[in-house]
Image (cartoon, rainbow over all chains, first blue to last red; front, top):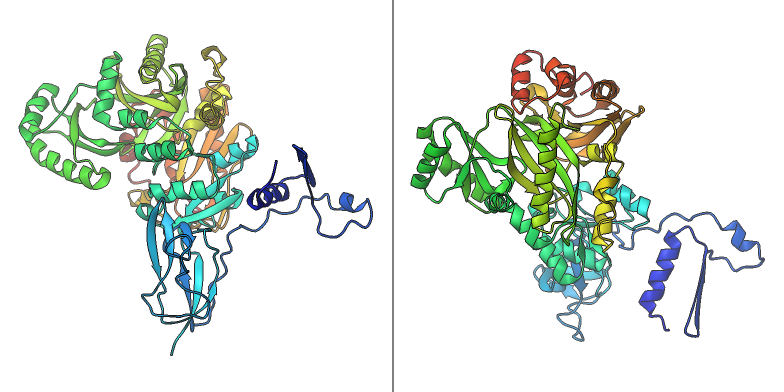
Length: 151
Length: 443
């Protein structure tokens, strides 16, 4: 048995959201073990003290609050779908941080059930932040990027 | 809320798809995860099949429960789910299509030997006239793609038929994307009695009894109850048998409701339509049978088949449900969206409240005005009515108008208390109390 990074992340998420503090998985000679509590276990009692159920993690989607700065344009996703930074797999991304864009510059693709929808910058300026990872789910209205407006 | 509650009970994770208008709702806070699928307008969010399926796939959902309304009876959603390997908790796309087309549903009923209301499809104004002469007036013009009480127009005089037909077709085209209409005799004294069924998709179907939903205003149900009062045992039984036969013929899968119109004068019954989804009023059936219908839907969808046999279904007592809507009875029941500043729901014995509205909740203007369902269960009908009256009186809601004053009138009414009212009841009640309709004190 081997676990992919995605599977490990999924297991971590499930344990975190559950009432359990420890998971040990052994299969086909591979052992995987997960214990709740970030502090190093200096004593055996450590795990007992952290048996309280931690609150559910904040939603995996980071929807950072829109900045109040009028010079910054928050590019909100016009659709729910999978966010892609490049026109196709392996190609160079449309934009990187620091790149100049026009209002109608294509900066990303949101794919919905195999249908590609282009996303345009919406403002003239410089890309300062790209907040969603390539291939991640973007919700409707989620801030995808920030553009510092020119002029 | 209802679905999330059962999922939590079963240890199932939930992902709720919401529009921006519902992002801060109570169900959104209770779901394990919420994803925003679009702006408030249903056509840009709740009705977007591709977006919803994409959201389910991206969040690794195993199944979609479509609830009621919106896409719950959309064959295209069921089809896309089937294609993408996401379980659709409900019937098959083919079954949804079979009963979603109300004309086709009538044909299915006839094939199953279930009587239908005298009526006819109409392809032209001339055909309609000819059919109308046979059916007689008053009659109803109904949209083939309608259902749920929508797209119905009444014709009292034959000479009005052509104009009403044209209007009905235009409205149907706009509302349902299908301009086809059909005619049905208008039954003056009728009772809306429906039968809850569960099917395993392989030919086994059981029924969970009937519900009386005759308290309706403009074809929208407001008060429902089970069992249907004053229905003779043979007639009641005939309804159950007909519903099961109809569903069995389709090898119906999951929960559904077969609706009938009982003709009081002629002591006969007619098939109206079948709803291939869980219905708003399902809690009254749950109250008297002790069955969690959502859990049964999930079990069937999960491949467990029908866990219950017909003899497992026992009904105890009587249950009544009142739909509390955000609307203003004093102004023709106009929707009253807004912020619910504070609300106290009743919590007495024998009372169940299904709601997504708490103090501070918003009732957005874009959707249905339903805020809560109050269900009263008691050993007999009079006790259930009394329980409901106390429960309604105990509701304190501030911020939007409600139809609570309407419910108070219904529950206090002698005709209602005697039971076995027909669908003309509400119109008569409102006429009697025209001068009295006032907003509820806290509304």
